[in-house]
Length: 316
Image (cartoon, rainbow, N blue to C red; front, side):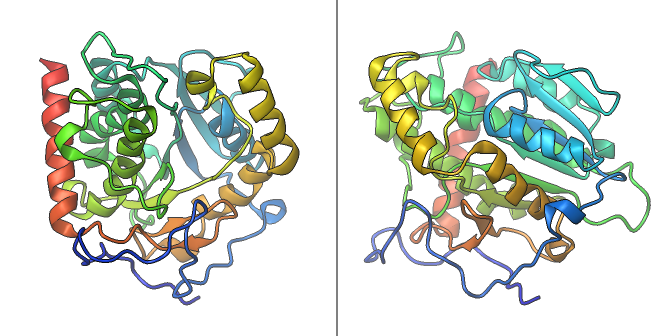
């Protein structure tokens, strides 16, 4: 293995940006060879998937369960057959109050891995939750921060001595160039769907980059699945609309399936080679990718401070 420990890029936000890609730029400093899915034994592992009741989260939960892991899935509606190793926790992740409660109450002391997958894409017109948070930011980003504030300090603390550092994987679109706008994180000054969604993309990457200071215990990693046929675009395109059906049909025809992605990602989630690393980002084939250039430590702190302020406002 040749795995470099990623740190936050030190380039200024105003510096000239190098090329970006929707799939991320390969990080050739890092080489990983996880155990193939067919040889993976997860019978001693526990994973919680926040958003594991549909889409990519559900596909990953099924693969982890099939390899012997104990799996907890969090979402609105349970859609799988009962299994003694599968636990369902109902939660509305658009609610910051409920997300904060979830972080406090989940029995995360025994978890090896926590994976955040729940998300939407901002609608064409601004939507707001009862707590006055723009809906995409609430579900796709701020709920994760709310959960982590309660969950992170105790994560993995009840496992046997010598257990590897617990891991948190944050799904989004890392390394694709989105830096967001911490001065209008809630899209109150102006609103465009893609700009609002860029706040969630940047926020999720920044959670990983800033975890060493905000959440120093677990090892954080970012995941970028790229285009896969799921329900994530229904909020933007209109669930069941002609446009939505055409887009999802094309994505399903030309891109990998949720099941294929899950078979690539589950071995990565538990790869022993990650034990001494943190802050790495991974693309749609579980390949290491570079973080977004221009997000330095000062910007990470500024963005997270704005996020924490918005969260406090929602909770009071």
